[in-house]
Image (cartoon, rainbow, N blue to C red; front, top):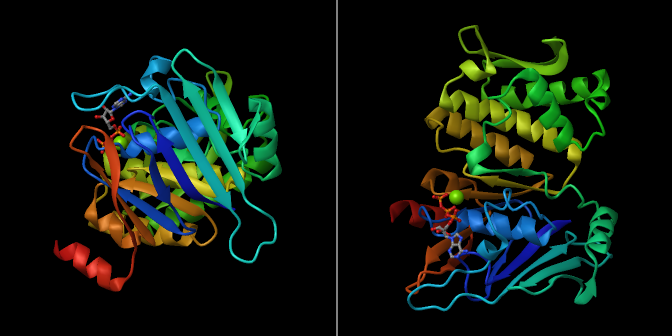
Length: 326
Ligand code: ATP
Ligand code: MG
């Protein structure tokens, strides 16, 4: 299954109804700082049932509503619809989920236009193997979070991500499976590097230790890495963890700004390989990332201060050349 359409109305910076259509492969959302790119990810996770305002980057539920501008009144209603489809050839129908909220009014979910409870949405997502969709997201502000903590806290974060009932559930076979993928992904990203994910005992508590060896045989702890090295190791680790969740799409919000040319090229090849069996929706403002796109979506700010989709392209060689020239 893949996420085919996202329709946003009244949510954060999107005042009027805005539709964006995606395809399997890599969709790249581009736009300058502050145009509303990350708000699209917030809208997707909110529609999937996210209720944690912190994770939606809000302090108050009123902040989910378009706040209004000099030329556009505040939104009184928020609606986000997600349409999932099977890839060509599948006989089974897709799935439409809509979440609506009114100021001081009810929070409502709809499945294929029928009102339903949040519980029914969770069950339907599980039946379509989409129940891990809230997890497979790399947030721009949190790309390095797993590298910056102590081993015991890292283990707790990993267990929370994998929805294990307790840290005891992270056993040797799970560790081996994640370690194997992490090593493989890191080799893709840094061909002369190596990593290891180890279960250790730290201050009397179980924890996950990461040992990272960079070209030149420089072995480092995660927190000692440079900004770009952290971004690369973190991407390899997060995507290795996401593999365990078996969700059909990953959302990546500006994972690459700190990468130099060679790391960026390796990351492009790596993400192309990941996208052979997983839909990637990537946010960027780097032109070089556009080379990855199967579809390109341009977000801009309208004259009235709200966000809109200015363009959509199915990318091909000719368009890529044109885009690079402008
Ligand atoms: P960057 O590249 O810097 O990460 P972005 O395109 O990801 O930028 P967003 O984080 O999506 O930007 O935010 C875009 C804008 O949305 C911000 O200017 C913010 O003020 C605005 N915004 C957030 N909440 C609301 C709201 N409730 N109503 C109107 N605008 C909002
Ligand atoms: Mg952003």
